[in-house]
Length: 439
Ligand code: HSE
Image 1 (cartoon, rainbow, N blue to C red):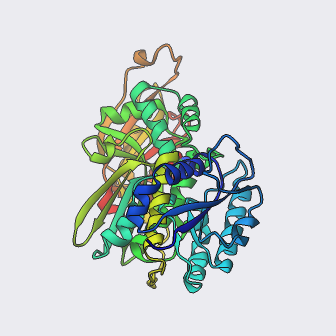
Image 2 (cartoon, rainbow, N blue to C red):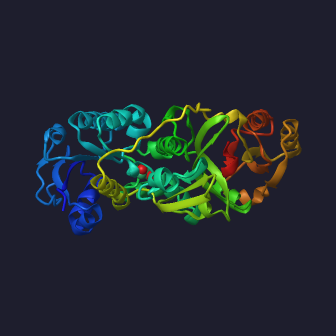
Image 3 (cartoon, helix red, strand yellow):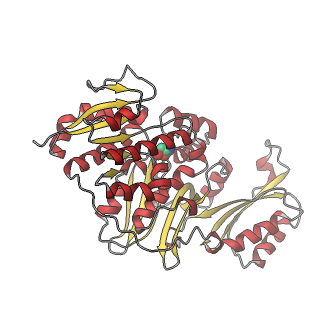
């Protein structure tokens, strides 16, 4: 058998420990698949964890020892930390040092790839260093492999998916048990799904990193995190979920990207998804990505999007891939302009929850404001105030489902409605998922 692929690991958090476990426990099967053994030869972590069996690999707290160690062929980077900027800077420094030292790199770090991949990947390619980042998107789902290998015959038209397990976990808890946001978030943290700073999950940033990577690979364009329109789930409450259900929808946090003559467009935000759509049934920490290619049509990839073992599954798959063929393939970028999120021109139906005061004529004025912008009402709910008694509400929400309209029109209409005397606050607006109409 060929010489072993010698693996150095940075980070012994949830993911790092799961990688160690897979490499040691599954060593023979992995060797058979890779054609050579995957040998853990060094581990570095800021925090020593003497309780973790490293299979005899030397341990250090200094990252520099990984790149200096000639018994390391490939560095697995799983650095995490409360301070996201510091963790990102450490990961970037390690990546650059690995390239300089001619060591291959496998990383789960989506921020690193989304923000710095445009410089790091070509530098690695030039140095003959292979890079695997399957684990950076959608945890255990081999979606990057699907985009770059399995769907290589296709011109990808659009993709849409649930790519943040924590947000999906929270929305599922709110949907199934009317559970409160904070309890569900605490559970996601306990299970090792959430980011060290969960604001990255809740505010949609984590999903935006992942969507930038997906769009870059799907459309052969540079990663462009800056032009991803980003909204998180923080504004969605249990009442919105109930109203959506009455209208025949589930609320999901989606990342949607498309490529057309207008360029690449990418956005993450909560969406109403028809309850019969497969993606509406993807619950808990599960992720799903739907990809449409010109030849294959629509395909769907489903699996656990976060957690130690699923992420380790993707990391070890990258190691096996590197062990099999150490030379990188070429990634030719196309000169397609980024269309940005171009949200004003985006056309979708909208869920509007309007905090209306319970007095005559309000509904009529709302309908009038919508009609002035050419917006039609496809569905409406207004419960009698008695039903809301007990909440002490002085207002009765009007929930409206609009037809498919331009974002700019619905924004003007909602501003006009919010200015009405009979409306007492901000309107909750959630787009209805349109997948194929993503452009
Ligand atoms: N915090 C991320 C999530 C972990 O919830 O999906 C995986 O990237």
